[in-house]
Structure formats: C-alpha cells, structure tokens
Length: 227
Image (tube, rainbow, N blue to C red; front, side):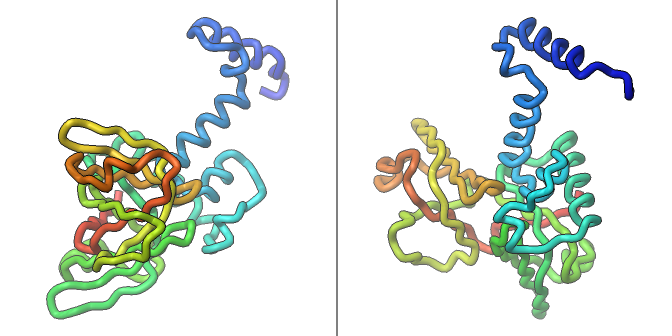
C-alpha cells in the first residue's frame, strides 16, 4: 500500500465518475469525502464525530457546547454506522443524546438529555423502561420522534404552549401534498427536524424555505432506545 500511486487512484475515481455520467470533478476523492460528510450530518451524526471520521482536528463551534471523550466519540460513531446500515424504524427524527438527569416518580420518570450540539431533549417514560434500558446519568441513548408528532410555530412569535421540547430553526425544504405537508427545519449543522402536518392549516400554507420557525413536540412523543 505504501507504493500505491495517488495519481493512479485519482484517475480511477475520475474514470468511474465518467462511467456513471458524472462530471470529472464530482468523482474526485475530495468531492466524495465532502458529500459523505454532508450525508452524515444530515443524518444527525454530531459534527465532532464527523470531523473525527474525516480526520479533521478543528473541533468547530458546536463542540464547544459539550465536551466528549475519545471513547464516547468512537462509541457514537459505531452506533451511528450500525443504525445507518440496519435501521428498522419509521421515525424520521433521531437524536444522539447524553442523559443529564433522571427524576423518578411513582409511575413515570422524567429523563433530561442533551444533544452533542447543546440542545436539551426531555422525555417521560415508565419507571420500568428506565430500568430496562439501564438509564443512568451520562449514558448515551437515541431519542426518536415521529414526524407527525412535531408541530411548527412562527419563530418570530414568543413560544406559546406546553411542549417541553422546542427547537428554533430555518425551513430548508417544504413539500405540500393534498392531505399532508412535509417540512424540514435546519436547527444546526448537525440537527435537522422533519415535521408532517395537515395541509389544511392556514398558517402553514404561507410558510416557505428560509422562514424561521419553531419545531416543538411533547415529552410524551419521545421514544428512547439503545441500538
């Protein structure tokens, strides 16, 4: 491998791009590397983990919110790759979270978590589920929310409602159907939230890409699982 000619490898990349009908510059190693990085981040893999996979040393702004050890980053990357290759869930929104607090009640438990880019996520699950999942502070967990459970509000207005989970972001894509409308909200480089709502709403009919909105969902809409 030490004698492998980088120029030969690059030419082979270009040949395969041409064979697939792509422009030569789109088939180079750098373009593929960049495309994979974007794909991972759109899949909600935290930015520090993407940077580690790519061999980049700069932690970036998002990693300044929360610190993670080398073993934690490796564990997250492994979990993500396993989930990506064999995911069997219908949930559109998945967050890699670290448990920050557990408040146990008589029947149910409130679990506070934080994503790698510093967004709080709250769920309420049964006490039995807490024990079955082995939840303790600092444990990594995947929190999932189905798109129909996410509601949107105008981001310019003050929040009104009882939903515990609130993400402010920018609409990047909106697809309007006869029955439902799908909206993708970019919260950060590593967090995109999908909401599916009824097309009958008058406010939603005026929402367009670039608009600032607030994606909210109840703590009872969050499902936790360990891959």
